[in-house]
Length: 197
Image (cartoon, rainbow, N blue to C red; front, side, top):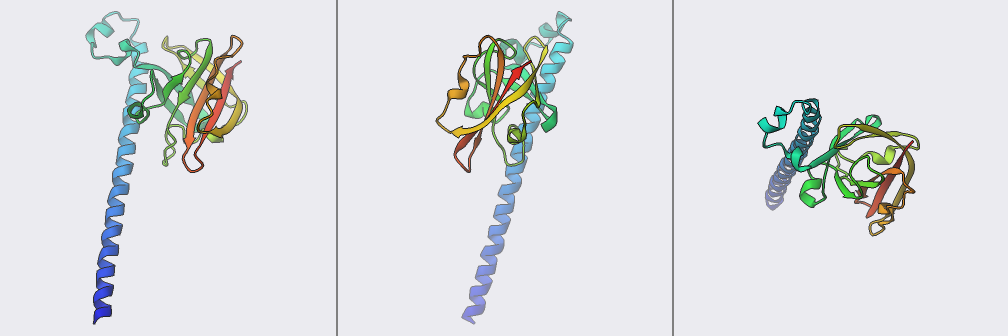
């Protein structure tokens, strides 16, 4: 009798644990989906703002536009990874949940080393797949002026989490883009660098 009661209690808590885990997982996926939608909306709005920027009344009729404040400073697009996100002007924990952020360096497509940090989410969003980039893969960066510059991967490495040498601005007058993301399992940082050719 005690064995049967013990089995029932164990079964009850096991089922309860599975239900709670499933709910938490669904909430996590929902949260990531909402973040992705926000990021896509920012990128779409950024693109649309340049379609209408020749119309002087566009920005005066849209006073709430965050782009006049340079919140979004560009777009990063990597066709190989089906990656298309806005680049936010500064980095913080909250902003990194929305889109990749400028970690260091100049504005997109200016001379120097633009370092862009992005999360490495389990659902393969943001910078989760940059480790699969190979030499000469193309990265397109749209600047604040709406113009696109093509960059080609020339360096891919994994460094310790405290190694920030990839943010160096010594580029000999060239345009460089550095993508950075964390590898939480190994406590390292994945770095991909691309150069305008």
